[in-house]
Amino acid sequence: MIVLVNGRPVDESAAVIRVSDRGFLFGDAIFESMRACDGTVFRLGRHLDRLERSAALVEFAGLPTRAELTAEVVEVLAVNHLLDARLRLTISRGAGRPGDYIGVEGPPTRVLSATPFAGLDAAIVEAGVRIVISSRRALPAECLDPAVKSTSRIISVLARREAQQRGAYEAVLLDAAGGLTEGTASNVFVVEHGVVHTPSAEGGALPGVTRAAVIEAAVEAGMTLVEGPFPASRLERATELFLTNTSWEVLPVVEVDGRPIGSGRPGPVARDLRTRYRAMVRRECGGV
Image (cartoon, rainbow, N blue to C red; front, side, top):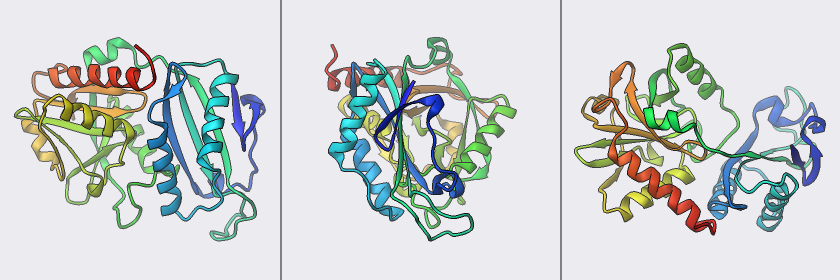
């Protein structure tokens, strides 16, 4: 695959960044994961909005313009001959020095990659997945605003490893008060008595682009949707639970910590919203 490093196309196997890059040294970097359908990135403007917000919150300077980034997105798809793809844009603060948390020697480093996207195996979606509630807690908003999509993901890495060790597909994290926040790489939705609930960004959930699209789809379908605090204890009354992100789209969950959700099978709300979300992506990207 061809990636763009600071706007320059290079074979992935030959791509390099400086060993003094602050993204490598300190995780001092932000990123966006995006989905291309029929050669168009779904809601690219929303992704760039979030990227700029992340940059402002962590005090990055010297980012390329939106026009430059958009041109690079078009280029990375073209050079890899991709129409349906998953893209990742990573931007670090640039080169620094080990042990120096402040000093920055150079402009931001950016890497843009694109890989073929075929979605999850249909069998996984049809069966649903098992998840666990991680023993690790989410980082409080007082420490890092959840709106920052940072590459500093060690908590998520360890929580996902815990999920794997416990035979689960994903782990969700609670806040200090025991409320649901998000998964290691996903937003969480719960259906209870026909009402769709999802933790709010103020409560520690990343404002996901897919999350927002699914919320729109739910509202357009006439569903009642509530954003706000959601204690994990209420999962016992849930009839459905599903996860959203760029790659998983709408992924049903059938079991949490060994306890079935609802009937123990994917439910109608998740199926409906997955269908509506996919139609939204095709429609906005110019497909049929």
